Amino acid sequence: MFSKVLVANRGEIAVRIIRALDELGVASAAVYSELDRDAPHVRRAGEAYNLGDGPAADNYLSVEKILDAARRAGAEAIHPGYGFLAENAPFAQACEEAAVVFIGPPASAIEAMGSKTRARELMQAAGVPIVPGTTEPVATVADALRIAKEEIGFPVAVKAAGGGGGKGFRVAMTEEDLEGAFEGSSREGEKFFSDPTVYLERYLHDPRHVEVQILADRHGNVIHLGERDCSIQRRHQKVIEESPAPEWVVDPEMRARIGEIGVNAARAVDYVGAGTIEGLFSTREGGEPEYFFLEMNTRVQVEHCVTEMTTGIDIVKEGIRAAAGEQLSYAQEDVALRGHAIECRINAEDASKNFAPAPGKIGAYREPTGPGVRVDSGVEAGGEVSPMYDPMVAKLIVWDADREQATRRMLRALGEFEIEGLKTLIPFHQALLATEQWAKGETCRDLLEDKKWLKTLAFPPPTPPSEEGEEEKVEHTYAVEVSGKRFDVRVLGPPFASGSASGSASPAAGASANGAGGGRAAPKRGERKASSGAGGPDVLPSPLQGNMWKVLVKQGDTVEEGQLLCIIEAMKMENEITAHKAGTIVELPISEGAPIQAGAPIATITSAEAAS
Ligand code: MV4
Image: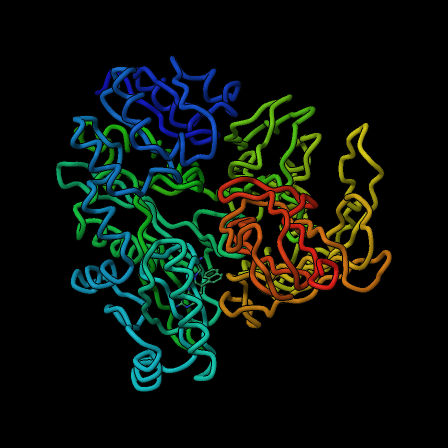
């Protein structure tokens, strides 16, 4: 076993890994950005190394700084957790070259699974069922049309080869949609993964997301720990996960089949450690259920805990043992599933504002306890949820004898959870788990997309913070369209000199009419309730809070009304911000990579008439 391990992550997963290291008798070294100086994972570790301030690219994502910290700590291994450098093949390679053990699979496995077309090719060769479609990239729209028409049939899913987790995912219901879907997917692949390559799959109607947990060691042992059902997703982000899947969805025979598929997939890439095979489970009209490989996540996942609850196996410890060259502690026949576990992601988000991130300072904080309750969190009372990082505050996991009792236990625990100072998803989870759809084990897609659950709850109106000593502020209301749905964003800002301000945000990665993602909503002019006049005000405030992803103009540029100015990433969605009027950009107080608050100025545009 190692004597010291560097934990290259933050938040709840860093704390989770440190706990595993403690139990294994291994010393832990944490890393932190300036913002995280007082974070629980820093205090919890044996020692900690400052990586500097700035965006994650300059600290948690810096290969050089992480390796340097490992060197200074004298750590023999690095645990990447999830996110950041966890699925970065060059980082795994750099660890190898620096003679530090990367706690995860070989770089070659990360790379193979990173390319979705390569992964599909490998899986097909290994006898793993893949969603019918192409294993080769599709070069042109004309090729895509031909393949869709002659080989796959409509509707067809267009996916980015570099993608995963829904990025670069578009659906073409008919021939007419294909060009837009192809280009949207390709553009997003290029933007997020520097890879415009796309491929096609048959689009499955309302499938379930069913994944299987894998453990592998360096001695050729590969086992599975049963499935997780993560069908409750919002814009490709999992919100609730459970293990096992509802018993009327996956029976023991199907479980064995899914497990075998997972084991074969892992073997095909010489996998080591904890990994997940994601798949789609679908039942064709009146037909037999089918299960298809979707992608492999070559890391420990957020939702690994539900599997730990039903198997009693510590997935994080097994992953560390495997990396240290030890044998897995369990053979397949030692794995027994018991009861039912559910996990709710408690995010700092305002469900009433289309799940906008709601970072801020945490006041009082009390976690639920009692039988069958587990909370994995990386925050504490008096702490802060920063807009710089993931908005997940905590994971609430419960176990009970069956699904119905686990649901009641979850509702009880959600009721005990006290988080002051922040909007969280607790009311959303309470509403969702109380629905008939959840009880029936439905995918809840209609509920999530149509926001039916919202109507069952009253959310207080937003109260933006006001700072003392500032000039008078007035409330501006913007109509923002996301996923084809209009909602109002209220922000406080200085009164406009004249005219009506219109920030418009349209999602580049929005959901299509069928709610499964894909398609693009047309940019929609926003509007301001108060005053109006010719020309409009000069300042365009941000309609939402997020991170400035791309700035496409510069100071001094002349722009047309509706011209793309910048893209703000919020909740892992791209939101295109367009010019509210034609004119010259005289001020542009934004920069790529920086967080931006709702209401903060994006640009000052003086209109042509005013300037002349
Ligand atoms: C699909 C699909 C239907 N057909 N692929 C991909 C990323 C993941 N977040 C969801 N993905 C989907 N891929 C084909 N060929 C439907 C989805 C999908 C989905 C799947 C399971 C559970 C919830 C979902 C929500 C949206 C889209």
